[in-house]
Image 1 (cartoon, one colour):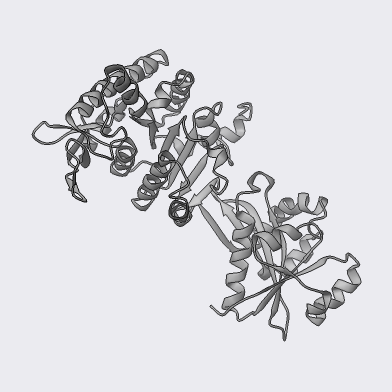
Image 2 (tube, rainbow, N blue to C red):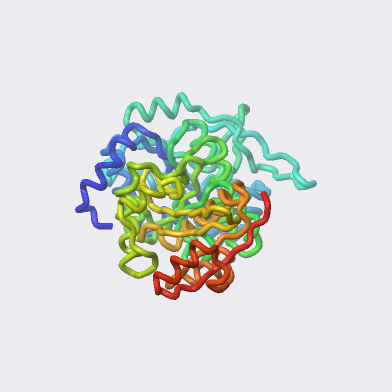
Length: 428
């Protein structure tokens, strides 16, 4: 990312100041050559008064130590049983990773500490399996963490915790990060990995609502890496518990963290709670933004040109999609008197948000509105977007004879010979 665009960056600074971000790093991230640069990026955030808590994993280090010591691991991710030998490896790996993080943070002039701020209890016997020294979080010492944050110190927490009697347990680091984010009321939880190839996850959108993330996990449980499923599952949990944004990033992408946080589009996958993205009726104040938004689609002959007057004349037909209070998409639903048909028109999404499913969301929203109004058939006129309407949102090709009389007249007068696309609607 080019950080010469200071005006764009500065719009985020007041929003982030004094807020808590929980940064979850896999063990493989700490071992990555780019970790020193990540520490510098975290130092940038601290210089902007962002309050940071870092949670680290140890899976990579555990596997390496197990090979060195010829010890078979009962579980490396803190979800399966942890036998005594695996617990010893976990403790050694956690100590190693914590020291590596402290060293990198010292080089980046970041003050940090490793607090004993989580209390755990045994995972117990589940499904007839004794999980031995695997634990789950019982309580987070938020007062301790806030005390460190108030003093400008970055708490570093690993996937090891103790119960009230001092017994040690291995805990899944993704779960630790989600629990801490909830306990301290973080505004962001950021999962960083170097072992997930997001590019191969073709069905994984760049932005996912909680329900969309749940659907992805449900439908891809057998085809997606366990590491990604873990992060998505804990992202869902975190969202449900009040964390508004969870980001999943590949540390191998140059400047991934800052690019994700200081740009509208970002470079990773974000799971968000309701309110991040909304579709609403257009207002008079939106007309200028709509005209700017559709200008590229007009230039590409994807939609017909509009004027301010033509939009204002039918303003009640227009709906806009906002992300973070910025207008990034629009669609119109034109009704016709004495007809059970309506036209989906002026569909446009900002170029930086293309191929992220927003066009589908706008069309589905228009469908929902149409159903509620008793409309039984939608149609769209397409010169350049035939594949989108037929392959993505379920329209089929029709003929000009399928149009309502008033629209057929305008179609004949226009002379564009657009394809007529139809979709039947069922009652709500």
